[in-house]
Image (cartoon, rainbow, N blue to C red; front, side, top):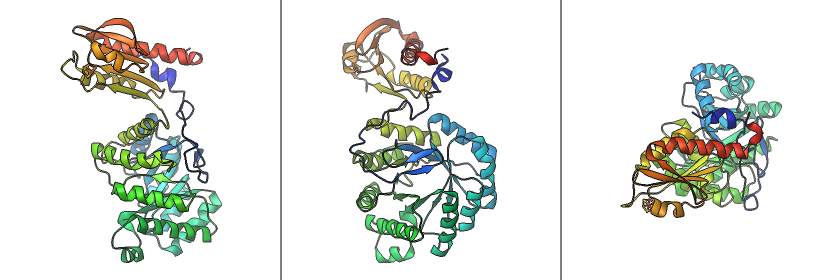
Length: 380
Ligand code: SF4
């Protein structure tokens, strides 16, 4: 609408983001997935997983590109058969973020995926025999690729299922530590670990327990988290609690639904904890009897216009002039609604009277001006 995409998309995430709380973060080993560093205080990265048929190359590439636009930094694809493994060759050519192959049961698919150019492998120790894992380890070592050991409450090793009555945090951590020991015994150290459960409490306890005993980088997630609302709640509590404690190096929010929503929720969690402030932060009042405008509609419209912007900007959308400006005094830009018109304000200071019909256009114009002031060199 206002040329913001071209003007600001050049500022890739990571360059324009804030990393805070390094002192609090647990130090972990550093691994590299393609060009993306994970661990050792690297920025906490956002991952997602495609839900296309990997064998459908164009559909998978299109989805990954959309996710890249949304800010996804590492992408995982399912590799259920040989054809899917071969598809990685072409998929890699069409995308610019690191590609991880998700492997279950058949070690030969991991070997094929690595040959096809995967930047990393995710395996589940519960469903690949140790003897087969050695072949994966050998090839990953030769290619200097990272393996994620992805322990999952739903697929614990039989022995641990028998030892523990339920997939408790202890059971999950024992599974992860056993696998880590096996990989290390085979002279492989280029790993990251995930210990996922659909139970938020179990997942939090498991990651805490593991982090006390190991310094491998951790991939955080709540698995089978449900549709958007449930997944956002569970992931915010599960992933957010751990991040706040300094645990976690990369994350994936699992949602039954839009993969782009996974990325949006992930950045929302990071922003809420002031870890990485990526994108426009829209604050809006809940409305009350003083409200003079349709705040919900205004929020939807402004969100739609700002979805592609990666700059850290706070926009306030408030229902009334009486309290709105004061309540959102810290916002970079804001609108406080009035009967037929509203007040445009910046950092709590009224700037102009605006007709209701012009709210969105005026806000976007102001946003463009603000961004241009911050990045004069990009304005050409
Ligand atoms: S800003 Fe105004 S309308 Fe919104 S909640 Fe506060 S008092 Fe109510």
